[in-house]
Length: 326
Image 1 (cartoon, rainbow, N blue to C red):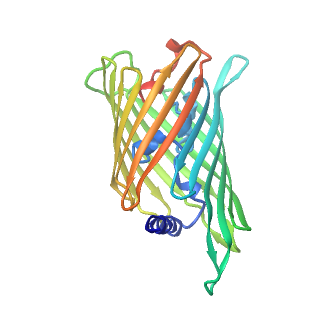
Image 2: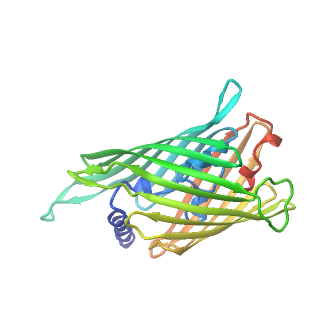
Image 3: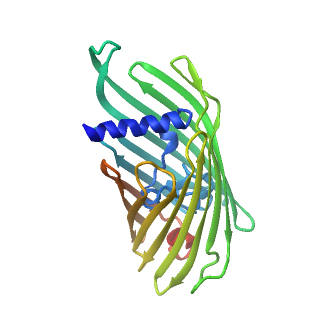
């Protein structure tokens, strides 16, 4: 009971301090991000990262499907699935497109009137539909845009609205320790999220949780099948405390990706997070499984899972190598 009470307080804190808005608009849908304390604005070529920065979609090489699952407490769950593919028209590449469906459900919970009398259980459900487009510009500069529709339901009350995200991603080649066959090793990304109209709920209008994210991903070592990156990201949402996230990824033997993240600033429940990715490279597809462990103060831990399947349409040696090392 204590755990449920703390979680309810946490959700209330988020909603009240971020000018309300669906909880779906505050979350990443990528276990890799959770393993790095919610970073993700620089995950170039990663379909799971488009809900953070749509510019990450622009270098998607292959048709990709992805599923994300994050069980909360009691019956509360976050779930997401997506499809993305390069947009080829008459043998020319015009960027990449994707569609993502995300949901948050609390499951049934007790309901009482103002006199303390028990009423039928309530259930809250949020749905978010995201359509994204990313395009690579010259000089290793990527841009992207998300179009979002979301629907919130609490009991018999409903609310809906729309919003857009815009993002950019720029790649650089800077000094590092050791490198081989890498065209860039520093990615800098910026995204602006939840640009849209106020959401009306129970006859009250509230602004959407406008959010700005900026971060860097620095690959400083790449040698003997060991790639090591440092990642940092600043997250600022309207009316909500600033978050400063740092983390590191170590990619081993082309199969394993170890992660650790830490929040230098922000968050009321957790500071550290840990994760692992497993990469299976086959002739016709790549299978990527990500898991993250997020210890929370007082309430135990969260476990985030992502599964991504890439169907190869071009030879492996011609794909964007940064999709693997980043």
